[in-house]
Image (cartoon, rainbow, N blue to C red; front, side, top):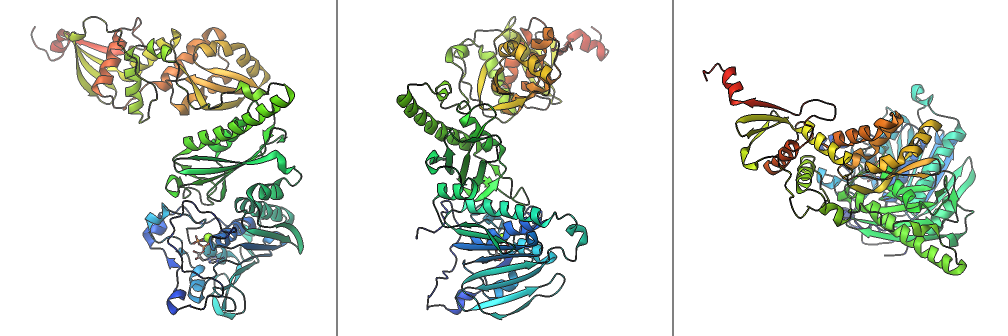
Length: 608
Ligand code: ADP
Ligand code: MG
C-alpha cells in the first residue's frame, strides 16, 4: 500500500476489480458492469432521497463519489457559485460504458446490493441516488475512463434520454454540472447570491479535504485559485485548510482507541483558542457530522485549561466499525447514530486530558506555576460513589432501584449493599405478593386485607423521602450539562441556592457566564439530569426549593405506569412503602387502596 492510499481500517467492502494503470491483462470480464439497480425492498429501507437543494449539496456528493472511487487528486471548479457550472475531476477508478449508463439511474449503486451491506458500509455513498437527483435538475456531462484513452462520455438533460459516445480522457472521471435548477424556477429562487453559494461550496470542499489528508484537493472559483492542498499529514492538512496562521508546534495528533472505534484527534494546546466553537469539529468515517455528544466531550476535555468563553481548536476523526454507526438516519448523512457513543466520548476525553496534563506538567516544571489542569479529574467517567455511602443504604433501596432500572432497560452501575437492615413494617410473613394489576398496581395480601398499591406513587414517595433525608447518592456526569441562565435574576437565584441543590444531589459549578451541572442524583436516568434547569427557570420560592427539587427528581426517577417489576423488586417496594411515615405521594395523594375481607364481602352482598 503506497503512502497516499486511504486508510479504511474497518473496511469489509468486497474487493473491486483492480484497474491499475498500464495493466495489459484486461479481459472482457473486467469491464462487466458493477453498478446495479437496487431491488425495491432495499431501496425502500434507505432514508429519504438525496437533498440537492444548492450547489454545495451537489458538490458534497460528487466529492464523495471521487473519494469512493479511490481518487488521489480531486480538482473542483465553480462558476456562478456552482449554479452556473460545477466541475469535479478525479483520477479514481473511472467507469466503463455500461456503468456510465447506469450511474445516473435512480437507486443505481456499486456500493451495496443487499440490506446487509448497509451494516458493513465503508464507502461514503450508498444510496445510488446522488447522480440521479442531480441529473433530474441540471445538465450533466460525465466523461469517465477505466484506463487512459478508453473514455466514454455521457450527456444528459433533465427529462431527456442520456446520450453516450466514445471520448478522449485519462483514467478517472470528470463530471460537469451546468445550469442547476434552470428549468425549476421555484427551486432556483431559493439560491443565494453567487458569492454565498461559492462560500457554501468552499465549506463543503474543506470538510472533505480535512477528512482525507492523503488526497490532493484544489478549488477554483470564477477562474481564480481559492484553495490548493497537497497530500499531507493530518495535522498539516487541518492547519492548511482551516487555520493557516497557527504555528504547527502548538498542535499534536493524539490517538484514542476502544471497542469498535479508533480516533485521531488533532488537538491544539490551550495557548490557542477562539471565541466560538467553529473549530471544534467531529468527523466520523470520513464525514463531518453534527455529533453533539462528541463535540461536548471535546469541549469538556479542555474545561479548566481555557479561560471562560474560549473554545479550543480541536478536531476528532473517528473511524467507527460500520456496524456501530448508522448514517442512514439523515438524508445528507450529517447525523449519525452511534451504538458505542459513551466509549468514544470517554476515550476522547482521556486522550486529550492525558496530553494536556503532560503538557501542563512540563510547563509547571519549567515555570514553577501550578496549572489549572491539575484541579480536574483525569477520568471523569461516571464515577461510583464511595463504598461507604453505599453501605449506609438499605438493600431495599437498591433492590427497587435495580428493578426500576431493569424496567427501563438500563444497566445500573450501583453495587448492591451488603446487608438488609430490615425496614419492613410489622411481620413480613403477613405479606403475600399476588402480582401486578392493570400495569399500574401492585396487588398483595397484608394479613386479612387485599392491598392495591400505586407503583409509581409509592416509589416516588420512597425516593422523595430518601432525598429529603439527605440520603441521596450523587453521581458525577461523564459530560456535564451546560446551562446559561436566561436572566440576571435567574443567574443570581442559582448562585444563591447552589448549596441546597447540592443537598439534593445536584452539583452546580459556575463557569464564566454558564453553569455546569457536574453531578446529579444517581437514581436519575441520565437523560433526565438536565431537567433540573426547567425547575430553576421558574425560580421556586426558596423555602420550597428543596421540596420541589426532591419531588421532581423522585418523579423522574420512579418507575412508571406500565413498567414491569419482578417479584423481588415488587416486594422490596411494598416493604419500603409500608414503612413510610407518611403514606401519601409527594403531591398528597394516597398511595394505596386497602380492602378488608368485610369490605369485599359486603361488595358482593355476602352475609357475614
Ligand atoms: P452512490 O454513490 O450512492 O452509489 P451515486 O448516484 O453517487 O450513488 O453514484 C452511482 C454510482 O456511480 C456509484 O455507485 C459509482 O459506482 C458510480 N460513480 C459515480 N461517480 C463516480 C466517480 N467519480 N468515479 C467512479 N465511479 C463513480
Ligand atoms: Mg455517491
